Amino acid sequence: LRVGMIKQSSAGIYSWLPLGFKVMKKIEQIVREEQNRIGVQEILMPTIQSSEIWKESGRYEDYGEEMLRIKDRQNREMLYGPTNEELITDIFRTSIKSYKSLPQLLYHIQWKFRDELRPRFGIMRCREFFMKDAYSFDLLDEDAKFSYNKFFLSYLRTFKRLQLSAIPMAADTGPIGGDLSHEFIILADTGESEVFCDSRLLDLEIPSEGIDYNENLQSMVDNWTCYYAATDEKHEPHKCTVPDEMLIKARGIEVGHIFYFGTKYSQKMNAFVQDSEGNKVAIEMGSYGIGVSRLVGAIIESSHDEKGIIWPESIAPWSIGLINLNVGDPESDEICEKIYSGCSKYSVDMLYDDRNERAGTKFADMDLIGLPWQIIVGPRGLKTGVVELKRRVDGESKEMLVGDIPEWIKGRSFCDKEY
Ligand code: ATP
Ligand code: MG
Image (cartoon, rainbow, N blue to C red; front, top):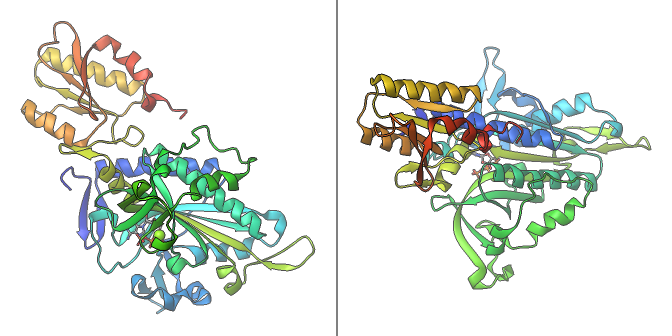
């Protein structure tokens, strides 16, 4: 709120202002790239759904007060989707009839509405939120587990690119249902749930080269799931054998959640395919969510200091903040213009602070909004063409010649379009 990223419009419903929107879009793009990388295809389903399919699955009653129910002018019962298992199952059953078209992996990134009893912590628990939800359809149980494992590993990589260390934890399945489920949790003092996990999980290496899907995915997943990790709902002290000095008891924020629920929806909604022998088989399904809008808050929770936000380079609204300390001075303005136009040549996002404010205000504001790098053009270096380059995360600064800025930019990851 202080930075002007969001504005509440009514309880648990927010407008996204320029800075907040820019960050959310960058997160969305990373989430999208990592879904595409494992071969999930993007679609877009509507926010408003008909109640009919929810009556088929039996969740129209079960979902209760969290579902926002609407009547259209024909008096038809509609709803604002809290999730999309029913809608995607309906799409699947009318399009796919044979095992030959399997597997199918589909996702969309769309607004959801859940009429939370107590919306709180701003966008962390709100009523309208932006979510990536993916769905898998497989013929056999073992194929479905393969899909599940694919998402499991891809989530590790996604959160790593967001510079978060998200720990997969055994989880309850809630209203989605099913028996296999993991929540991806980041540790933060302000987290809503209490979590218990083996500290060795924090040291595990996430493959940055991508995942080789010909390898045994189950054994890669086992590298993680062999260590104890559970949220308070699932924590069973008598089953937890982690020695005290290795057990982390902390608070956590759920940023992703994956489910394998088998034929729970396909049975009720008649989503069958023919197998190679011509038998009708109920399709095995899983669903996989990431809270894209919640991540904006979760990343701030895990990366800030007393001065404000410290954005990871991968999702910073702008990579560099340019501070002109002598606005109106022709020489200073000229140097800043030169740096600014030079940066746009490399399509680097730069925010130029050309406001007529005191230096202290400019420094404080730039630290508050937390761009990873600051280039400060002050009176001292004007004659010699020297500027100050400051790194937000540790405040370390050094002098740099204006002419050297392009070289420096080219070596930075935010300039590397081929991540
Ligand atoms: P929670 O336990 O936090 O209520 P959930 O288990 O009901 O969440 P899922 O159905 O697993 O949520 O949704 C997938 C993801 O969507 C969650 O991991 C979370 O990141 C995000 N999410 C869920 N509810 C909200 C909300 N009210 N506001 C913001 N993000 C949310
Ligand atoms: Mg969940």
